[in-house]
Length: 236
Length: 269
Ligand SMILES: Nc1ncnc2c1ncn2[C@@H]1O[C@H](COP(=O)(O)OP(=O)(O)OP(=O)(O)O)[C@@H](O)[C@H]1O
Ligand SMILES: [Mg+2]
Image (cartoon, chains in turn purple, yellow):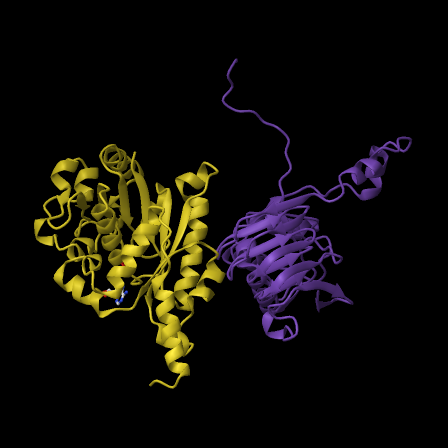
């Protein structure tokens, strides 16, 4: 056929993963709610799967169903799971989740990189940190995500907007919305801005709201970083 | 080729229809052939403010549904030469406007007119998005208060992501029109100042229209306030129109604000 009506190819899709350690309905719902409040636009509609590899404790059918319905009503597109024991896996399948294969452990990946070749390291260094640059204002209701990159903003970030990066966030203007740096667990990420008026700042999942910012940095040039698992804000 | 300009705001009741009527009249007074379209299907306010409600026979939706042609539906303004109104339907629901239908009407109007002014309904949903989709420029009407500014910010986000130009990777030209501005309430910090709003929205200022009783009087008479040349609001709209067509006009109203402020300082009560 010269003109097939589809192609099947391999691809990889970015998804969020919820590592579940234990389950208790109220605690789960409350933690989920708090998490989403940090960045509603970012989480709403996000694809999500459940990683049960570190799950301890028991689970029954209704509990599995309520996990699914809570995630979905919170706006996640929960589609699958991995790493479960057999009977939990069956419950997850019954709840409509797809069984994802468990990734090969890291040690098995090592041989893939030819040891004799010194290229991989320098190659990584020659393109140090990819950066996403936004020169227009990010308005209320809008969201910008720099995936695997730093984020540089040259115009204001409005109240009600979200700016998110796997790396650092630099705002060469007023930061009035929410800024989340190092969202994939990069605790070295920082946020820099020319005028700090943010609703919320977050580094690697830790966050604080503006009611706990000090007067000394409010509407001033400032940086936000993580120290001993707590968010620090310093004047620039 | 006509220039399509949407008058939009997000928040309701901030002065979109008042501004659409004034600005389209102002453009026509300057000799630009102008049509103003009421996108607020179901409410139909523009024809009242323009004073042509009794002459509405066919409307925008009739034209889209091919129940009437444009010539039949366009109402020629009695006061101002070169000005036409395309009224909205009072009976239909919001979904009566289709994308293709609106595009066809705009294309046909574009052949004849210099300016097409689209009076948007309130909100940021479908109706407002339809009104702004084809626009090349946007007049964002804002009142000097937090909730209005916030909604304007949202509509600016939609303009730069969901309009036709945005989809083509281009930018809609943005204008800020601050209306119902009351310097006394700004001085007493009940309202945001021009500078506050400009700083938050970060778009060029087209004009500041003072809160004025002349507006209410004008809409009761069905005569756009810009025709009331003695009123501050009318003068402020004339200035805004001049800026819209590229003239460099000083913001008169800002000076009055200073005077008011000085008076307060000098103890005038
Ligand atoms: N500069 C002004 N001074 C005093 N009153 C004003 C001024 N501008 C508008 N108004 C009044 O505010 C009210 C709302 O105005 P208008 O209908 O133009 O707003 P709108 O944004 O079109 O509203 P909607 O969202 O319902 O379409 C009217 O009563 C109008 O007379
Ligand atoms: Mg209106």
